[in-house]
Every structure is written in structure tokens, then in C-alpha cells.
Amino acid sequence: MSDKKTSRRDLLKGGALAVVSVGATGAAMARQEADMATANVPREPVTAQTLECAESLFDVSYTDAEREMVVQEIDGWIDQMTRIRSHDKPNSLSPATVFDPRLRSRSYREQADQLVPSGADAGPLPSSAADIALAPVWKQAHWLRNGSLTSRRLTDIYLQRIETHGAALECFVTVTPDIARAEADQADRELAAGQDRGPLHGIPYGMKDIIDVAGVRATWGATPYQDRVAEIDATVTVKLREAGAVLLGKTTNGALAYGDRWFGGITRNPWNTQEGSSGSSAGSASATAAGLVAFGIGTETLGSIVSPSNRCGTTGLRPTFGRVSRQGAMALCWSLDKIGPICRSVEDTGFVLSAINGYDGADAGSLASGLEIDASRSVRGLRVGYNPDWFEAGSAADRAALAAARDAGVELVEIELPQLPYDALLAVVEAESAAAFEHLTLSGEDDSLVWQVPAAWPNTWRRARFISAVDLINIDRFRREVMEMMDGVMDGLDAMIGPNFANALLLITNYTGHPQLAIKSGYNDLQTRTIFGDAEGSDTTTHRVPQTTSLWAPLFEEGTLIALGREIERRLGVADDHPPAFR
Image (cartoon, rainbow, N blue to C red; front, side, top):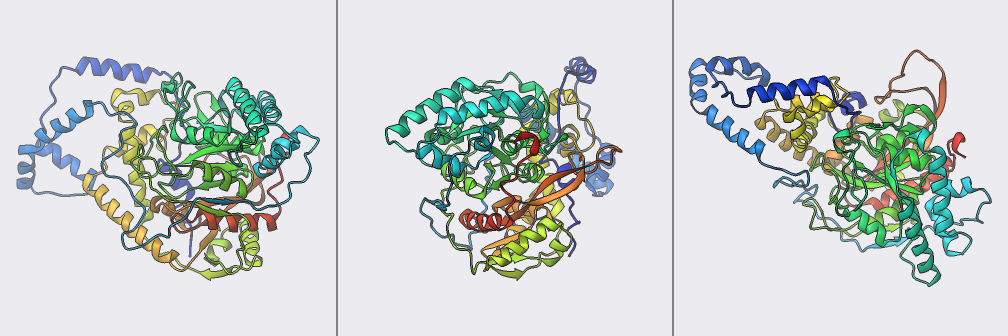
């Protein structure tokens, strides 16, 4: 089976990730002047000839009589649409139709909220500040509790590393040292008094800049919003504060959640700083890989956790759709957006997910589900689906991950996915994101975005105006067909394993809502890459860079992903390798 029907480039072009940077241009001013000049000029009525010319856009054909009938009422319909465009629709206003990944024909097991650490030996506190910074959260948590490390010292180590390396990586929009030190001191006082909020208590982290922290800038990575200051905390912010985590600042994301380019620069991959860190959770992945934070919070619409984790060698967990509240986060695509952790070890992702999991009535897409995680659980006997063709087309690191799963005693089950027009699903993210940022298109502010190639947001959103409503509904019906297909494939399986982008699985599972865990599986010698993964320029110099391999599980079964992923990670032995320049 080929995994090339829907390529990674196709997915990126689809509009879930982007590379956008914005600035004032003459084109924007020209359009504004034109709008002012024509503001009071009546719109020309639609004629039968207009319709005939437009038919090729939608691949339909009408007769002369049919066109004349349509013309009789089309102007009134257009006027209705014009009026609704002028009605204020804040980014936080979600559609009345809400996506639910659950199938009515399927029951889902009830889970109690439970977090069981692996119990692995953290060893003594390292003497090197760099080794402390690059240690996984589960080790840092142990050192905080045995008194060999304080949250204040750990926080100061990270703040110093941000000051030293942050500019080179371009991974922070805003650093919050005052907040960090105050929260660290509080964490130390509470731990000393025996008040333990859980494994994240005293652990410093970075928050993706599309998620609000009251009183702190949340720029969404784009020039039009670079002075935006959040008024209230996002639900995730509140949950992490309640868990005792320490906020170091806001990490960069590609402008309006697409790619690694933001208004202040391009976020860098710490393994090769000549290339970007992919996107759009670019800053969280870069900062985590380089040891500037203990963990980062990312979001994913269509690859924004998995892709930068693959580029930077972090461990990224995209949870089941609806498991983590998005209240207070910028909406890009209401039926696809998800929030999840980016870490340096699999067990750490369980710590973070357990802290941010939970139903929230303020998020229309939120679902109530408990979360059972036992990092020490045996994986022997788990039924894990795979396709040999995926690994034949994959890398040596992918095959090493498969071998590690086999050696762990899982039962590998060959599976096949049907060849379906999965790329049609991309219309959903194009249409929803175009609606979320309609004002940029209609006002002409999209002209201020400097990335003006066909794959960029401005063109994507203009083109989305020509997606037929009928076609979009039929695509939504097809989405349900894909959900039912994946439910059938997953039936009887505990998990699936494969290269991150094999057989359009990243696309498919984002649209079905299934969780995905990307774990570092090895290294490749590659030339400097573009956002799309192509070699950039004529320089043939290669760099040793990491990659990840992915696991997928049935809805709400992240606990299985963490147990299996941790065992594969242990056997591969590459999680503790870090970028040489940042050790």
C-alpha cells in the first residue's frame, strides 16, 4: 500500500499549518482606498450570464431556463450573506453545529481519573545545570520532593537558559520572569509545608502564544495582534496553575497557527538552527528540545504538535478531540482544534495531560471523560495494528520503533486502510479557518501577510469562498464515513503504530478525533529543510537531526499510548539524547 496519495506537502498546503508573517504593504492600502471609493456604489445585479461564467468554478452546468429561474432570487440571497458578514462574530463564538468524535453505535468505557507513575529511579541530582534543565519532568519532580532541588533554582536555571539561547532559537514571544519566580517561590513554600499538588508542582513550562494568560500578551504570532493582551485566563492556564506548574512565558507559534514563522522571526530547530522547527507549536517544541522549559503546551489542528515534535525530536501527545478544553485559546478550526503536551519523555506527557484533562462547559466541543494512566503497566499481549508497506516506505528509525514494539511482547496485527479521497477533508479546515478570520479577508488586512504564495493563508481563505455549501456538507458526511471506517479498523486493537504521516493517518485521525503520540525513535542525516521538508537551497551539508514515530489508539485511550510509548522509548534508548549545542 502506498502512503503517498496524500503527501505531507498536500496536508500543509491544505491550511492546518502555515508559515505566515505580516506587515503593512502598499497592496493593503490600495485595497482600503478602493473599498472607500466603492463603499456607496450599488452592487451590480447577478445576471444569467454571470451564473454561466461561475458554473465552471463549481463544476456544474445549468440550462438557460434554469439560470433565469435562479437569477430571480439570487440577489436577495446574496444580500442576506452580506448582512451576516457585517454582524460581529468574535473568534470565541463557536458554530452551533459541534463536532463529536463519538459514534452513537459504539460505547466507550468509563475511566476514573488515575495517574500511576512508573516508579523508575530518577538517580541523584546532576551537578550540571544543563543536565538538570534537560532532565525529564518525572526526574525533576522526584528531586523536588527529596529536597535536592527547589522550584526556584529550577526556574532560575530555565530563565538563564532562555536569556542565553532564546534569541538564537526565536522561540519565545514573551518571557514572564516575575510571574515565574513568584509561582516558584509559592511552590517551594507549599511543598515544604507538605502541600503537594501533583507531579507538575514546581515544574516550569512554556505556553503556546495562542492560549491566554490574563494580563500577558497573546499575539497569535501575527502582526495585527502583536499588542493584544489577554483579559482572562484560558481554562488550561487555570488548570496548570492549580497543578502548581510555573509559567516561564509564551512560546512562539506560526502566525495564526500555521508554520514556524511569526511576526518576530522564524523559530529554529535546536538540532540545526539553520532550519525552522516546523509548526505551528514551533516554540514549545524548540524550547522543550533545547532545555529552555521542562515542557511546553501545544495545539494541533492538522499536525501542529506532531510535526514540530518530529522536527525537534520531542514527544508530542495530541489528545482525543474534546478531552482538553480550548476555552481561552484562539480558534482556528472549531471541529479540529486540540490542546496537548510537548515533552522530553512519554511519561511526562501523561503528567501534563492528567493536569489539563476535564470537561468544561465554556467549550462547546468539550467532552467528559476520565483519564486512567498507569506508566508502569505491562504492554505484553497488546494488539497493535500496523501495515508492512508503511515501514518499508519509512525510515530506519521507524523500523526500529516497530522492532521495539515487537520485542516488548505486543501482538502485531496487519491492517489495511481503504483508498478513499481523504484529501477532500481539507476543505473543512479551509472553510472553518476562513470563517474564523473572515475579517482579514474582507477588510484587506490579509494583504499585509507577507507570505502570499498559493499555499499561504491569504490565498487559502480567498479560495475557500468558492467552496460550495453543498459540497462542504457532503464532505462532512464523508467525514462520518471515515469515522466509521477508523472505528472498524480500531475494533479489536489496543493501538496502531506507523510513521507519522503514513497512509494519510495524521490527516485521517485528526478528522476522526483519535489520539496520536509521537515519540523520538532515531536520527537521520539531512540537509537543511523548508517548512515542507524539502532541502532548502543548494547547500548539500547534512545535519544529524531526530525524528519521531507515531502511535494511535481508540478514542479516550491515551493511557494505552503512554504505557506502550514508554516501553518503546525505553527500548530505543534515544530519549535522553539532546541537541549538542544546548547541553
